Image 1 (cartoon, rainbow, N blue to C red):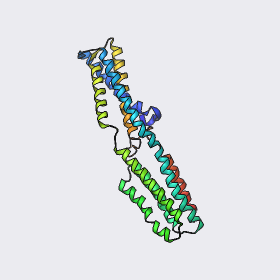
Image 2: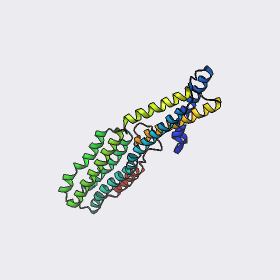
Image 3: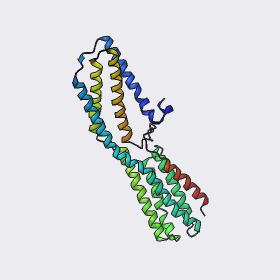
Image 4: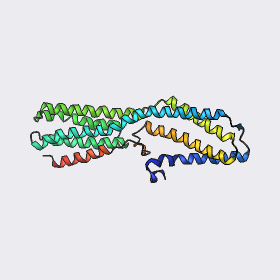
Length: 261
């Protein structure tokens, strides 16, 4: 259902079942008479501390997220810059090998997308990147100007740096111990509300469902923001960074190959 409705509400739709489950458990515990904790102002302090901690963690992961938003555009820019250099040379007929190298840049764009979606392992991505390096001696021997070759090497190095940065972002989670304490506090808070006597009963069910929705939503949101390139697991949602710039760059590069000399 979350996939179908999508958009900004997809995360909320995935969290609603947890809130309904908490309400159901609260109803059962009330019927069984197992509400053994008296509601006190300490619950308000625990709720405030939990939300503060979750807010602090969101602020932390937003730094990497804002950086990650720029990466697909920079990758697309690097691919097209390399393609432009080779396309100009192939059109001028000055360096016949440039068209072959341009095809390798297109295949590198395909490899980048396959890597993002988990269809290509990281070594395969670097093999596609290094395959362009194998063309440099041939291009140089074929008469490629030194300044063109230097720019190609510079753009290739920039692409390698960006792809390694994406890999680090994917594999590094923001303060794992912070996740642990946030999840523990959220769990204790919800457990305490489930076991607390809240009268009237309808108000108890409402606040248990609402608070459960809030804390689970924030924890799931932190997880989504912490890995903005979660396409390989098939669980990517609207909070993932858009790869459309790379898709568009691939399409333009393919057209360049068709018009190359």
